[in-house]
Length: 146
Image 1 (cartoon, one colour):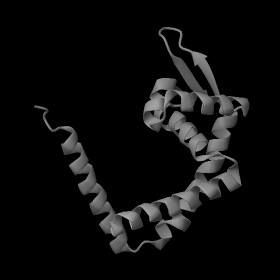
Image 2: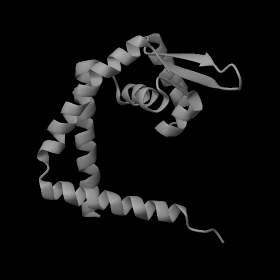
Image 3: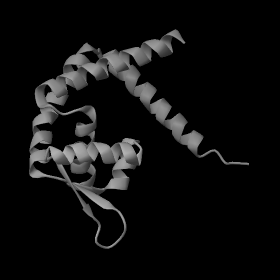
């Protein structure tokens, strides 16, 4: 349990520093960045609101409230889908510009607070652990049900 708690504490500490740097330099919260990044990378600027709910692992209500705040700041727009039920979320030019400004800040913070602390052996160990955990979790999902 000691190793587990150390792992969680280290992750929270590093992640918190990255988010603090990002917010301090760009004004974006973790959620803002996550939404804008997904819109840009996965949807080429637009995604169904349900796709964002699924990818963020948030509730519909949480995402809806967050998007309302982002709309007020001019970062995204929401439009009803024309051919089916649902809502499409679209990154605005201001949102894209803000995201483009934030990415190097996030990259630098990740480097400073995490990557620069690692040795080659650390990188190899983390990579091996991540691969084993990925294989284990994907095989657990394929376990047949009785």
